[in-house]
Amino acid sequence: MNGWIGETFTSDVGWSHLERLVDIGNRMAGSAGEREALEATRDALADVGTRNATVETFDIQGWVRGSSAVETADGDADSIALPRSPAGAVTGRLVDCGDGLPGDFEAADLDGGVAVVSSTVPDHYDRFIHRREKYYRAVEAGAAAFVFRNHVPGCLAPTGSVGTDGAPLGPIPAVGVSREVGSRLCRRHEGERVTVRVDCETPPAESGVVRADVGPDTDRAVYLTSHVDAHDIAEGAVDNAAGTATVLEVARALQARDAPLDRRIRIVCFGAEEVGLRGSKREAERVDPEAVQAVVNCDGVCRGRTLQWYTAGFDALESAVEDVADRFGHPISIRPGQHPHSDHWPFVARGVPGLLVASDDGDRDRGWGHTRADTLDKLERRTLREGAIIVTEVAAALAAAERIDRREPDAIAADLERQDLAAGMRTTGDWPF
Image 1 (tube, rainbow, N blue to C red):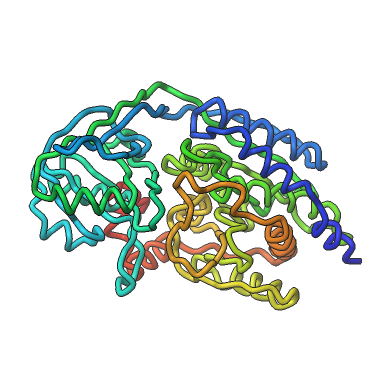
Image 2: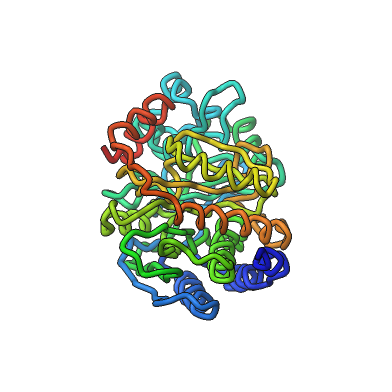
């Protein structure tokens, strides 16, 4: 009765789609490559037998990369612009703001300066600080430009968007530089005047969302989600071609299981995640929360065998994941708190039960993510297949469960306060309560 497990462990459906996505090239939100990836995912879902596979488009603020530089007396330092940075050139004193903790900005004299900020936080600090929080704290402190310095060695400049829902383009130019370039800039030029220059285009653009269905046509559904877009500087293999490939493999496996599903599984693959969760925010606003049994969002899977599950304070979700992991003897880690930086979040913010499944490789940071090194060679077929088996069983278990109670948004907000995330979300304009 478990023949589907063997089929999944030998299937190339997911891996082939992973290769298809990374070979497209640029999948930046609003690009022709993103559109190709959305359509390829729709077609792949139809090919494995899902119903009503479609792409629906929506408008976004586009952003197209040009050149960028940090100009010093020694010449230009290699950099890449952060998406949704405005175009422009700003000259100011270079100020090393360290790890970008709130106190680092309070202590720095940033009026009209160029803030250089690390991409990590020290081990003693009790929470991760997102790039956008560091950017907007620098803006509040008076910075005229922002330089995001990778903490990982290897001459890899990091990317990642700025901007808010209300103002999609950020207020000051922003670039990423490698650890090596950032260290050299601060050693040689701290306190000196440098120029940060960004050239880019910001045309109107169009993104989209893929939808398809598996299982009975019930009113209430489990949402199985991922995002299709990726940053334009790399293949976006882990982030997030692997997540979408896993969703496709799970869609195939759900139909191969002997036991019929108790509820519909709605598959939703979003565009424009990397530029402010635009696709999932739009979807969450349009869906009746009572029609969603739970959300299972795949983002950053396949980086390691141990699956990391953010359960957003929903005990029923944690129990379901632990039960499946125990039955399969598969390694997992549970993060019961909130993680407001992926496509499950717009649903969780409305009280909808939501899981984020990623990989736990022991690194609290992105690893190769958001750099040119996010490439297919870092991944293994076995890891994708094993992960798909576990996600399949979790999705099926949630479809079979009794109605899972929603949480009040006030309780979600209180979680964020306890985790010391609320102040940063207010700084970035992401506080939805």
